[in-house]
Length: 243
Image 1 (tube, one colour):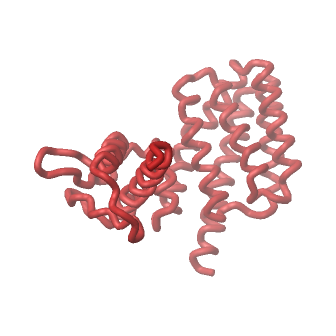
Image 2 (cartoon, helix red, strand yellow; image 1 turned 60 degrees about the horizontal axis):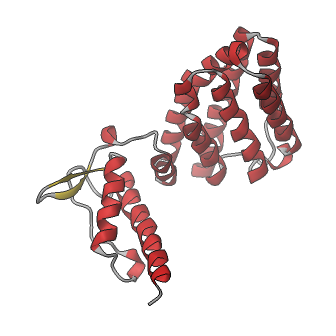
């Protein structure tokens, strides 16, 4: 057998088992303290011990399981999860608790992004200004397809740049978390096909206010953006549940 083929197959089994067990813990199929179930793998051959050990280590690093001698890998409660891990965010957004997870992420954004906008007004470089403005313009250009990838790419770039422009390394490190939130809205059909015009104007306004150095106004405008996003999640999410 070709060694490269074996490696590719192991990688595929690793990813599939990681997804299977990760989702089982996130959904609550495996209760706190229970051992991980035997892999189902949709009827395919069971993964090797090497693969299961590697997957278990990854889940342990995410806080989803604890590994102890004789007890094996057992599921942890949500309080132990690394909820900032992009993969954990992805699984939570695929779970029945998607809307609740998105609201939590919106609350995090409300606590961080307005302050980041205020700091950016004092710390942003000319490159930051140019990127923020370009991303806001691209959002307008793609606004009639706000639930598609080009709009998402521009939106993610805007918010990543905003966090980086704050000059706060801890805020900047949340870029993947914010990106996962925005991607989750698109992937789970919680974005309108046509972007909210007020939200578009506010993105452009934030970029201009940061360039102007008006931190107080930039903070207020950013707070409106995050608030509109959370309201849209509730509105569209409620319609999809009831519709």
